[in-house]
Image (tube, rainbow, N blue to C red):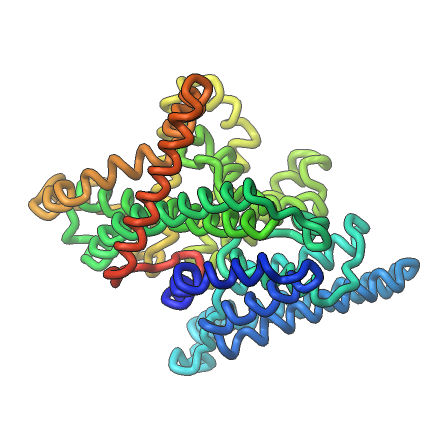
Amino acid sequence: MVFSSLTFMFVFLPIVLILYYIAPKKFKNLFILISGIIFYAWGEPVYVLIMLVSTLIDYTAGLLIYKFDKSKTIKRICLIVSLLMNLGLLGVFKYSGFIMQNIDAIFGTALFDPKHALPLPIGISFFTFQSMSYTIDMYMGKIKVQKNPISFAAFVTLFPQIVAGPIVRYDDIAKELDDRTINLDCIYEGILKFITGVGKKVLIANNIGMLWTSVKGMEASELSVLTAWLGILAFTLQIYFDFSGYSDMAIGLGKMMGFNFPQNFNYPYQSKSISEFWRRWHITLGAWFKSYVYFPLGGSRKGKGRTVFNLAVVWLLTGIWHGASWNFILWGVLYGLVIIIEKLFLGKLLEKIPSFFSWLYTIVLVILGWVLFDTADISTALGYMGAMFGGGTLVDNTSMYYLMNYGVMFVIGIFACTDIFSRAAEKLKEKLPSLINYSTLIGKTAIMVLSTAYLADATYNPFLYFNF
């Protein structure tokens, strides 16, 4: 799928966009549907049917909710069917193996055979959540029904963000599905955003990610403190630039096609609390859980006790959403616990202390969270954390080798995940707008040329969030 995605973007994308632009307005959504199916089927020739089934279920549920608007019973049945079918797809393909493994471990049975495990459909957590948002909003009376099956299917199969987000809810692009503006300014802005994403993914995430792959493959007992820290810092940068890079590519492509997708990242590593971090990281997922879980449960309107319970539920589900593993579940639960503590009293304290210390508290917890997120199991994560905090020697030849080879990438990555460059550009734009415009054009061209050259010879090119 990695090959197919990159081939699609760099070889077929210009052809797809040209055909899209010349297609008559009434056929543009049909073109989106066909191109989205081809894009997904290229990597998932069988599982594309799952995406289409999810689409059909929610389209039909929406029509029935609209038709029987006066009947609360029928509307509720339609919503339940939609939720059960979509969550059932997730349950079967994403969690059934994990559930059977744990039943086997507890009762000594043999339900699960890894050789017969179902492959995980790429991006299933994204397109099911996206499709479900339509049914839920229809039930709640927040949106108008989409009667055109082609337009609804185009919403679900929008190829720029179909496999790794951002999670675009129907309400985000409802008007643009029926009538959108495509002009040279939008295309130019979209191209610049797309190239930014390519640079993040190809030039930074791929290069720094190779260090984490090497370190993660070593035994924790063999790691020096510096090697362990360099490894997880590399992953901290890799996952940000990989995911935010793909989001930027998707947003840019959407812009070129006349859609305005929601922002998904806002310099999260500058946060000064864990609560703030999650307002800046994977923004569309947080908004989805807030709208469809936290607020329906009562949010923070029913007292501290209920607020704590609601937050606990949201963060348990957030962990489960990311994967079928105790690591992910514990990762979500621990984040929920920290956010609850911040909500109760710690948040006010963090606002009073010097901002450097509140930032340090946040980034250390985030880094430790990434250890849990990307290691094989909890014991491996604990062993790795032990290496980070003095399990072996402080510095060795391996750590110095990595520091010498990846030092420049660390500096680039650290500065690039802050808003330093954007703030500097804004200030210069006020004084020298022409210089900034020309510099931007030259810089983006250089990024695209370097990225294309890198991809032509690259063998290491994972897309981390395709796995969700």
